Amino acid sequence: MARLQRAPRSFQDFVRRFPKLGKAWELLGEGAAEAGPLDEKTLRLVKLGLAIGSRQEGAVHSGVRKALAAGASLEELEQVVAAAASLIGLPATVMVYQWVKEEAEGRPR
Image: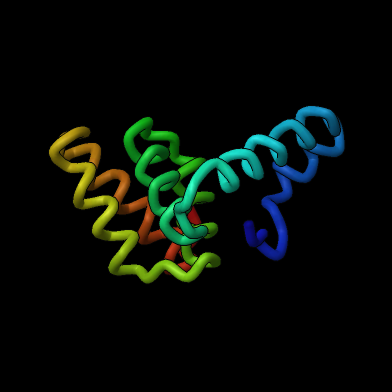
């Protein structure tokens, strides 16, 4: 699975402090990527949907960066957000839409 050029500083600091956890995290990602036929972009969009459903802001921001790096378009990201509306409700969807737009447009949080 392709990697971003650089992980966020907080992640780098955490992995330096807890290298075994960093390695375990890497193995989880590799295992998921090798578990079936999904291509990288599709897998990244699925993972973004999971982050949206669990309303984890950091995971949504990360998911957007990784999906874009895997070749996803802004329209595809927005469709994932729209698909979540019937499950998480409109207010939460609007909140998540803001997170996606911030990350996709490179705006500060």
